[in-house]
Length: 513
Image (cartoon, rainbow, N blue to C red; front, side, top):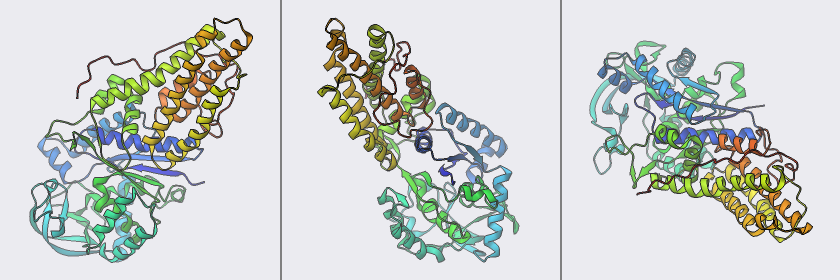
């Protein structure tokens, strides 16, 4: 059975982890965990892109060897993944021999098949982006600030025949509407492809860049950073070996919008076409995290360090906020005010308070065990009916990456359990000597417990530690596959519940914008 193969973009080894890196890892991790819960075998890849001019220049500026610089950055990114509970199966660094070997094999194959040729280039070059530019890259006649200082360059290099596959790529995108998500990103790629595209320069002379993988057919050159980095998706999965077919094609490449055009949306599909390989099934293109509508940047001093938030509030609340707040594909604003509002209202008040009340009342009124559901009146039918509507819809929303809507729907259900508790008022029923009231009391505890169980299941991909803790408090083993367990049932009857605890300590500090 083929693995569900999901990747993030590999991070560039020229800086420390920030909010955007964390979000992309979490987004891919939630998808990977969701697929595992559906009993799909999953292979989840992330890693580090270590070659290129910026890495070489940064290392030189610090008086370091490039490899030593990359080792430190790799350690920081891997530490972030661990703290974020990222369940990746592999972490590939492009300085590993297993990767360099595949890059050389692919370069040689494409060169032998006439897809790569040598020619002289005259034109514009962005050292900052390590990219040759065309006039169409100008905006209102000027180079965008993102390119930095653009220089004119005349240089002999090797080129990949990108242009000859342009029409094929246009057809593929038009005929496969799910290839790029969301759809408006596909339109942007098609808009880019309306104009002729030039062949891609895939080399840099060693006289100005030594930090890269040498071309197998000309040792005076190293490989262009994108032609190196993109191949990580193949080298991590055994390209050239029998096991490769267990993974390829990728089911989902999770990337940021800034590297869709041209790298992933144009270069990568055409590279695969030239290699005779099937294309990935989908690019999931996410937006940026902004502050007050502006992109975060070191120069503006508004970069959010995910480690600071994890240390103070825990990984799960951080994961929850990012998935709850951002509509995948769109940009979203980050602020501590928004974070604390969601933390206090949805996590502490709605979920945390519900779990605490359940454990407390079960201990006081039912000897700490889950009783049977023996009453089926309007209050119970309303809760069960809401779940029977919401459960399948939440799964559908997970399937189409609408996590913010799925979580909104889930917390609507969680709030309904809190309202149900207020309606039944077990603390009042406990004072009654009427046997029917005793049945209502026991039923109310059982209904609350079942609602908490279902809520914890649906939260499992997003908040794995909290979900596991809740399941343990319900006397359950952590669920590995959902199967039919997400449906309303009575599986908790007789289970001994854990002791009352506070899952989300409220944050009482003043919230400011």
